[in-house]
Image: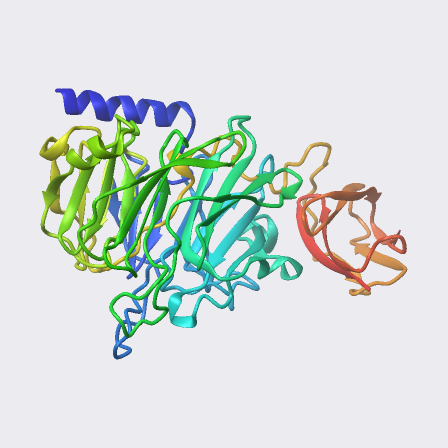
Length: 475
């Protein structure tokens, strides 16, 4: 009964905040889960796969991310190298992203605050490529390509930070609008916290604390350096991470200041060899890690390092490596099993083996899974990410045009001609830049309409004509 009450409480809180943006999980290798009915159901169709057949390489599909709208409808997903739309098609400009699918946090999706159509897709490179591409981002407009989404070409693979560890997490700011993205620079003990606001991505807040992330950058020596998950607690007040490129392995937790972005109070945890996964319980009192030795739980409620380490409990010896773990929108923690099933920690708030871990709990056949579960903002806090209103924008009159709109020349330099059927009614138009900022508002009618674009800077623009979306280029 206590367990049932815990689950009902977590579900009710999730529903209160409309946190359905994490209800569809698309992951490797071919795995997918739908949480919209409360109990996750497996379905097929994910094209995310790794390349473990490459001799000597741990090239499983590790990092990935997916995002749904506030009604739980899938929008898009990525493995850091490609981005797929809701129809499992690669988006326009969706190839050749500079992440690496074998990075622990190959991809992370954060909606642009206060926008219902723009999304940042962050990527990290992998140790197999010596972390060379670092932390980069691309911008996606979900309203393009008839509502299936498009990677904006001029906002693709933008470098934020070179040589980062394979670690990302995200936390909602207490103002209810902004989002923190946290990365860790390799060869240092530096955390970089980027505040993402409606105006864009701010310069990072840097905190030097904890262990230096260093070691052998080689996939031919054990699991190499830089791998391992980093997660934030559901309330955003703590960050935990692990990495395995040193002996002994490293596992640490920190306090996180939600207002300033600064980390403090480093606590070192006992490790057991090649730690990879880390996750917090929904009530933020327990931390789980995975390693060669299995799954372990730490009671972190005391905040005291000695007390926390003395509380460690092994809840399972059955685990694969590397083993990703991820808190679900149902308040349970899911564990990869290197098979066609997932393990589940059913009551992660409870102490020790009372957390009720069940091995091989969720059958995802015919898919299999080695290391990949998608990444989400801590606590599934997507309060400002709503259903995209691609053709119902404020002040826009929609119309059903009977034939294709003609726009020329495209690219344009001084004027743009918009040709509508002679019998078309007067139609409202808005011209946006490639980040969604309104640049021009005007009306067109049947026949040829000349639009002055001479004052615009060179680049790509988005033109909404009634309920139709077009891309134009200004020379």
